[in-house]
Amino acid sequence: GQSLEQPSEVTAVEGAIVQINCTYQTSGFYGLSWYQQHDGGAPTFLSYNALDGLEETGRFSSFLSRSDSYGYLLLQELQMKDSASYFCAAESATNKLIFGTGTLLAVQP
Amino acid sequence: DTGVSQDPRHKITKRGQNVTFRCDPISEHNRLYWYRQTLGQGPEFLTYFQNEAQLEKSRLLSDRFSAERPKGSFSTLEIQRTEQGDSAMYLCASSKGLAGEQYFGPGTRLTVT
Image (cartoon, rainbow over all chains, first blue to last red; front, side, top):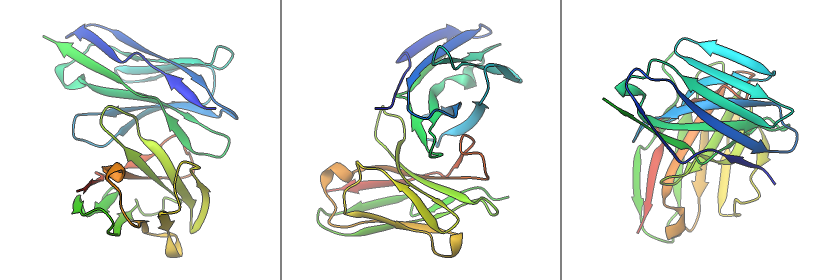
């Protein structure tokens, strides 16, 4: 089967750094994506890792370790607007995305 | 670039009726995906197209669901004989080459009464 596990909720304060972990079990794994979804909105693409290592895009970074079937999303200098759900998604060998159940991030002042 | 659009944004229907949703992807995006999302869950893959070819359909999808993408542009998703369990947000996404980088439309919220 295919599954991705993430923590259900994370709470952090404004200006802090938070890491959201994702472990996956998929067949024919190609890469790991991260999406942000605000309440009532559509998912928006954040990052994609096909190779092991860290990818940095502004305040957000994403990491992948294929040998450990593990990745994480790192959010720095947290802002109130970062309060949202974050989903990891694994790309299968057939080029479809399998999404995790999501992590609800609450940023407090 | 106007983004992915979906129509309608909301649909209320009675059990047993058929419904059809439309998705217009970002122009020049060759891949188009359909997902279903319920409260507190991640998007669930339904099917996807590369150009006009439907390449994969979820095994969880019953025969009541069908999708088309004529001419490789817009796509339609039809649900026949709707059931209350079909109530969900139906999301469409498109991508250009890289399946991991998808751009989502605003979704169609279906309520079956």
